[in-house]
Image 1 (tube, rainbow, N blue to C red):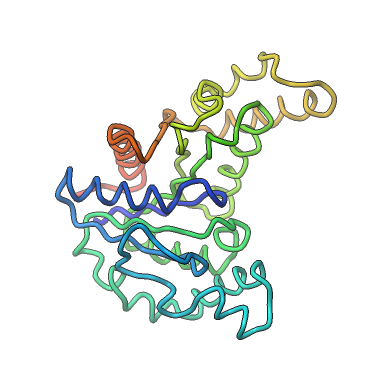
Image 2 (image 1 turned 120 degrees about the vertical axis):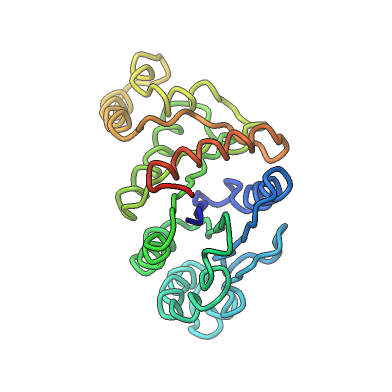
Length: 255
């Protein structure tokens, strides 16, 4: 069964770059049939050639002009449009012929609240998951995380994605070559309880709330190890592939 990875994350977390580099790695290292999919109507240029591109149907600019709305409202509208066009989209490659592909990599908008968190987008992804092994790869941008509050709030976006979509989600530390505090992120994913005793907190509300949030992190961390990915390091792409394979085996039998 085809393995589908939906890359999600905050704007600038590296989704598009990882789709480009990881798809190339799969093609050259595994000789796999890989389909890259773009679901971001706001992107202007892509570093990969998408098999399916939502901009075939509409762009963010189209929606802003058509409905007289701003960019944030246009992203919300785009999720609605994807749902409305779902049957047509499912007749397009690669969705129309999933068995012909080994891997499908889906690039999503950085506005999580305007896409992943919308019921229309969740239904679209659920539709695909019923016919494939699908996981969400949530990118944690290591270049903007230096302390416990940064790390814990990023982790909670990962938790919320799992809760809102009901789909298996894998945390991925992106931009490892630009990381500000990789040991902290590694602990957050593998052993969040160890962070509580660290003297990272400044007191006040942080000291009261963050230990409780870390307790929730401990309940949702799963058995996954931390994977640090840099698009400039082929070996890290191999590590990304291995952790995704483990996730695929957890959600279905890969054949």
